Amino acid sequence: MSENNIISLKPHISLNVKNVEESVGFYSKLFGIEPMKFIKGNTTTHSIVREQAGEESEKPRFGYAKFDVENPPLNLVLNEVPFTEGGSLSHLGIQVASTDDVIKTKQRWIEAGLLTVDEMQVDCCYALQDKTWARDPDGNEWEVFVVLENTEPAAEGCACGEKVTHAELAPAEAAAAGSGAVECCTPSQKATTIGATSQPCC
Image (tube, rainbow, N blue to C red; front, side, top):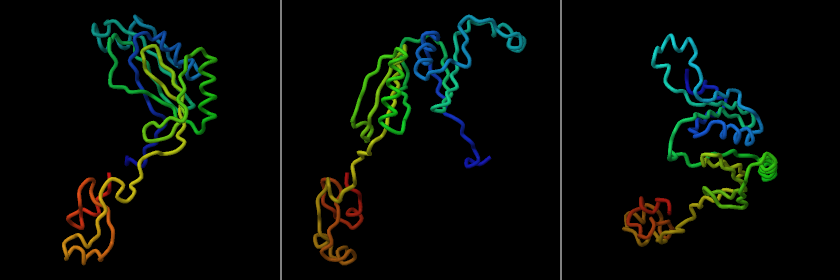
């Protein structure tokens, strides 16, 4: 099957949690739904699994929960495992269409008993955003945010380099480019070739 024929249903996030019951309580409030699957630790191994895996299946089993979220579409799994330090996860987020959506989500979180922190008109990830945050029992931070405006630096001509006329270049190069034309140099250095003048600033 080609990549173009793949039908993506929803993203999947699997989180390691220290206490599945505490985390289920948090995510039930965060998304406003109950998990579609919730298995507490030390459960009995299913007979089919026991027949296939034998004694290996009798090892201690930790808690597990799965949330099938419709809005936003998300398959979220919580795996209860013992750990002392977080992994490489930075944070998680839900992008919405407007600041009003951010405020409505924040209000629902507060009504559900979650603590929130606002960041309005914040320049984050090269974008102006309105957002609010909540943190789960294991320290994973969730944001609900709207992108108001991109703040990525524009590649303005010579914003960080020197201007040079083609007259300052070698005669053959200047003739090829057209006398008197102004180009953008590489940052902090004069252009010595036509190729150098075509390099983007910054």
